[in-house]
Image (tube, rainbow, N blue to C red; front, side, top):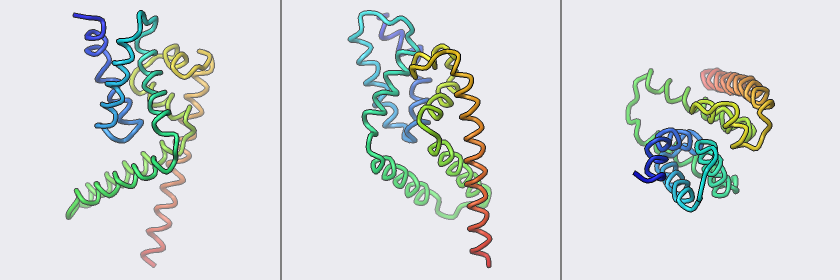
Length: 172
């Protein structure tokens, strides 16, 4: 088994999951993961494989998503697909979909570094790997994650209040 085969078998699932959370589109995530592994083929050696793969994948996403309008269009398409897939939703299914959309919106509202740090940590990267992937000092990763979690909660709660207010106004 070649090194790239081993890398793929070891890291592909986590990398695609991370990218899917980052992009909101599994097909797009798989394409970026494939490109990441292709770039790994060109490397003679990798000192920290997982951090390198996540850093390259993150950079590929950043390069592809420079324009904010592209991201807004993508999210709009996902929302439209969700509406099309739900013909007559049960109340709990609708509530779960609303909560998931709210959570996604709260994550998207975070600063990029905070969002990436949280997603990488969720995928099991340790502080040193996150530091290397995001070009941070290892000591600042904990602070970054703590701040990101606090801002995520604040953002989610604010979005929840906005939704409740809209629902209240609509009922009036």
